Length: 109
Length: 351
Image 1 (cartoon, rainbow over the protein chains, first blue to last red):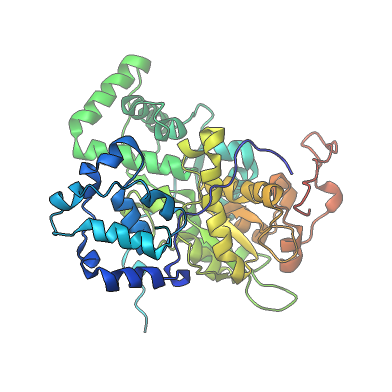
Image 2 (image 1 turned 135 degrees about the horizontal axis):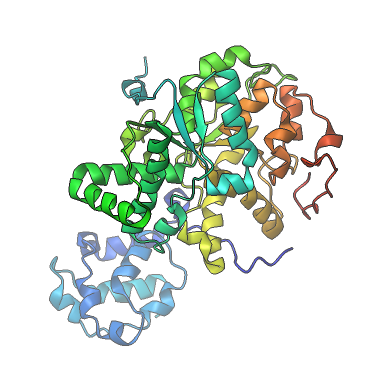
């Protein structure tokens, strides 16, 4: 083995055919408004936690939709449930039950 | 019947009298390819082609890496065109796909903004005292080989056929992003159905492998490989292509662009060293040839004069399949007649 000073970057392609969408479907059953999100990112822009950590609701939502659940539980712990995101959402989503149910589904809290 | 859209577009390719510009990468890594192209043009097709001694870089790598400003690139390109003008030619043939993209870009900008052309004339005049004319026909060498592929076939000693099975060889073709993705009109079949290499393969008896990542970038990407730390991203692109083509078991890869040829060839060695993985069944790797090397082999040229021994993945198994005769003892004979020392063998990739 030769050390070339770099490693091969892993692919970022998500093969949706190989993903398990059970958790996503479970969330959409409990909070159907989750489907209304248009990924605008207003929630992330206004988020207090985002100003001090790498917490990003929009990213979490995208990862959940792509069934990329790894490390999500730890990220969700950063949310303080203040509800500022709900105030600015142009689609009228209540994000607190979404975060709470994501935590439950991922067996965190 | 399936409609072949590429048939609707054939670019204009001059018949004779070409001014040839060599490639920085090819002169270093595949010098036999350019020599073979000139030999094919002169000896097989009996065309007039000028190989100018005073030529220089087009700044392509520096330009795409943001080291060289646009005005400098324009002036350097203008100097190359001035060499063509002074030699009395109007048909420009850059050996490299990157150069081809650079020239297409400059010509398009001058066409859209004549003031820019006038400014470039002034820069060149001030710097060198030279004048230049814009070429009437800009073609890549592969365009010329494509145009005369049937004429070349008449002179060929071999075909792209496996002599053991009688079946066509399965060939992966990689056209290169800067051939037609920047200016689609500059490529045969435009950017959606570039037929330049596929046409050669089909005419010469082979079968083109249509694999999922066929049009994906090789990973060259200029700035992406210049810094050592970034090269993992470059390898990842080639790896993606290799993984995609592996199930089709291609006999070899043929490339249009110098950078693609280099990376598709050398990254196979890198991946083999890093991950103990090759993408052929026997562990020898998939040979990567330039289109001139492919044409030269079929025309019966000496594979060692074509420079196949300089490639990372060796081509003996491919030549055995086609039935090409070669002398293994001559493989490392230098131009001075002496046998050169053999290169070190890779630890995983068989040779």
